[in-house]
Image (cartoon, rainbow over all chains, first blue to last red; front, side, top):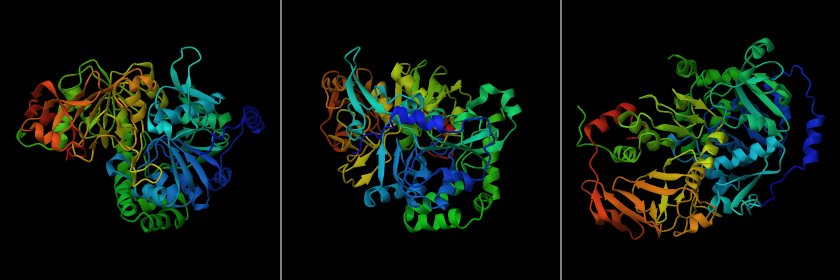
Length: 321
Length: 256
């Protein structure tokens, strides 16, 4: 098992110093932004489970046939299936990996982990959070009190139990996680990458600070004046961000808080298909929804107008009362 | 209208589990039965119950008929007091703000350890399960209620893998592992309500569900059970409890 592959602090600082952090427009297409993700990279994925998944960016990375990615996310849903099933990732760091609690176990994850040698590296949910936070803070580890005594800890030699130098208590040190690139989907940002997140923010702020590059996809690009009217809503500052891509319904078929809920008919059909045959079912799904459409809009059209509208009605209803 | 004599095992779980909660408590709930039971308790007896979800929600009031599909969806935030980052809501457990952690379980052992990671040898697993999520954090840092189906293959002497620690190997082993706070408080099944012995930390039956015998509980359990000296029989679900529960989950997502 590997040591935690910590990047030396001086290297981390040098990488950041070399980034162009000026106030400049970064708007580009999905195709262009995918250029930040190269084979073998560590990719941090924002959102959680079926929420604010940067699905359009994942879709584009899979279409461009990236390989050997090591992906991390606090909780993985069908995005994990698709990354394993397409061959884009061979390693996923997370705390929970299935399509969603409504559907039981993911046969796709099981197939790839049990018989194909792909790695699902399990940490507790807080463990993933403390790893991103340490990465975002510029320290090599953080202490925590969960995972001690469990086999989750015993499986992770990268985590070090210690006796606290102040109190003598047992604590667990978890190593920083600094992804090469983070993919984060938000409700709105400006052309510079000042990103506003409504509702649940999950681990996205720590992830953005920890990563060496950040690709933002957004439901809407708004003016910098709009951002400046409500700076308290800005959760990710522009100087963390390297690419801005406007992608309406960019988390589909998952949800984006206040705009659309998960597209459950599509999700149900997907799960049925891939769990019936995790190889052929997945291949057919990828062909139809990932490789054949000419654009993200064509992909949305395949999900269907009714689904999109229904999910939108439910999504916006959070603001009705 | 509501037939109090006909109810499913899942409904029993949700109702008996809800009775374990007290008004004013801060409860960290998983999706499914725990969320339902906590919401049921809020509506029936505990208006001051505060529900936390690992997605980052503090103080949710889930809407009847609009149950969230996970604890990370926008529905979890309905009428909440606050939304936080998910690491920060988990850190509330570590600081000690949470009275009860409330989860489902796939496999449990005599010391209340839960496995949701591997069936068989973790190096070459027969089945790779979804993993801990926040389960390990919750069970490491607060008092736990677990609501789960009672089957012999789920109630085993020692779990294949400790995903979420109970009392580990019993006695003081939990504290000695670096977990001085919390521990298993109750396990609720469709057959009985369980607690844990103060010293040995082994599971024991506190109350039988109506119509269930000691033998039936033992026969469905993969290890020798102790029975509390003050063993009682639980009151069956009332028609009022069933009525509210069925309003919460009209589509039977979690109570089929």
